[in-house]
Length: 361
Image (cartoon, rainbow, N blue to C red; front, side, top):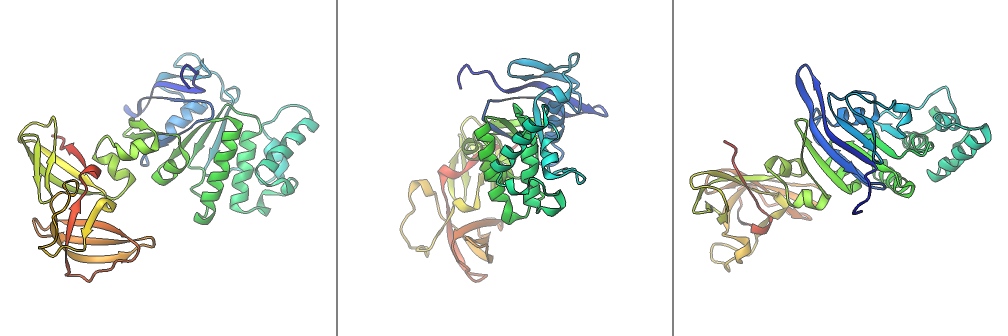
């Protein structure tokens, strides 16, 4: 993609309400055929960013470019209907008084035969050709969602904006429809900007994730990098449950019940949070206080007392009260493992799976 012009580029977008910046200097690029996800909690500015790109809301600062051409800044503005941008929302918003064919044809121009041909093509692409003359109320929720996708893609938009489009679907349908939607968008070469608050959806669909918080993009990158190299504690916690151990730095090292951890660049006396996900804690089933020494990567074993254990389907979640300070730590174990409350067990932490963050002052 080197040297390729972005299909969508936004530069320093700002939107204020009541003097507060709900979108605060947001910039990103989306290439043709790429799926980028704006991921973050409710109220972080994701949907407002989408509305500004669509042209239904005006920014206070910044500019929007499509295929290298300016479509909107604070002076110049291309109307929404001329931006070649498709929209999909949680509410499928099909017109109940129009047939499936007329819904899909709604944004098309040209003669009747050409529109009918394009409608038929798009409905076949979403495996709904047999419903071309049906009415929306005769379709299931998943089928209505696919009609909405066909309608959004029929005018051949250069960019597709999707705001929580799958959140209203039954869990059993969601994965299949997401995959089918993604395949179709990729085939069309459409640049996609997807808004969601669900990390799993972002990881499943996106080539690139922009993690938003408080109106800003705090980290952006491929899903693997975002998950495995988070920028701060909040970024780790957004993707999974976490355990946090706080320590004080002495000589670039932090003492913990699980051994010493490196804290390079952190001044002596400063506090750090050592963060580890439950799946990266290891239970030493062979250790009874006299067992073999752990490997260096596993650190020092620490003992905890089982408080509760629950089977979660593919894994078991076990909560421990740690001997050293009485803190609660959670570990996950594959398959079924349900030790009785009160049972002592030894835990180790994989150093290569821990994150060390300075505590903000």
